[in-house]
Amino acid sequence: MNSLKNSVRLIGHLGDDPKIKKLDGEKSVANFTIATNENSRDHDGNKKQETTWHKLVAWGKEAEYAGKYLKKGTEIAIEGRITNHSYEDKNKETHFVSEIWVNDILILDKKEVH
Image (tube, rainbow, N blue to C red; front, side):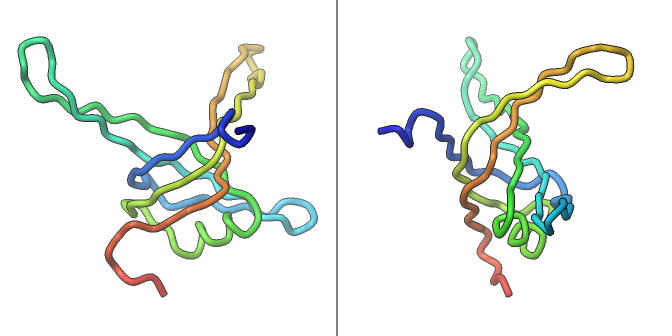
């Protein structure tokens, strides 16, 4: 049950191509976003759709996979964990960031991946 304490699974479409960086020691990191959509009805019964954007970070082999196969608009399923951190900008303002660190990526598009 420990693996369920901080676990998230999402299905969505990439908002942009992943941005890949090589860190010291040749480790790769990929930063990208996906949009998830929720359909519901308002109090008058009208259909509405709400889109939520999620920041994703993949490391190592998953980062390299993301850089090689993922493109803006690709539908994917991911599994990972939520991380939170903060930073101070040049104006001494603190910003809080939530990200999903990706453990696994599955491409759902019906197009063949080469």
